[in-house]
Length: 166
Image (cartoon, rainbow, N blue to C red; front, top):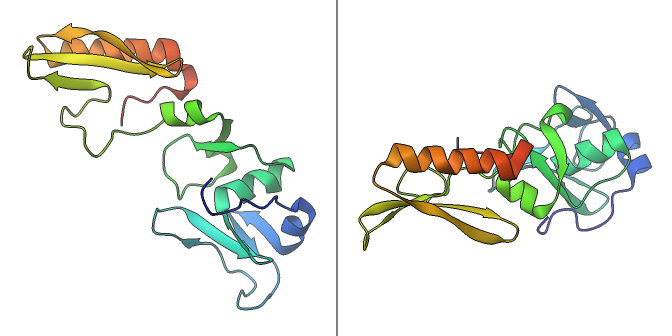
């Protein structure tokens, strides 16, 4: 959750100040520097943020609370777009479920999530994180074979949170 929105959300206050339309919240009233109709700003991490009553909140957390009257510890963007805060694109998740839906890491060199080149064996190594640890799936001569094995394992163990790195 980071530095945004550690304070509990006052849902009645949220609904008093904001309306929901087109996948985001907008100010219903003029308040301080915020004017009626204003929307969230995008922070350096690509998330939309709204500030009210002295606290900055990630907009997707406010959208969830606005619709459901509460806010879970983690909320997953199904399509991995932090700016797409349509309620249909959000789902409650645990930390590990949220991480399962992560995209391909910046340091990945194979182009496939969970597949790495093993220099010493000169083969592709396939791994999958689940049950709190990294699970070895095997080494393969062919990148396509390693990709297929890790993809099938991801579907089996990650279920609806499976993300092959797209």
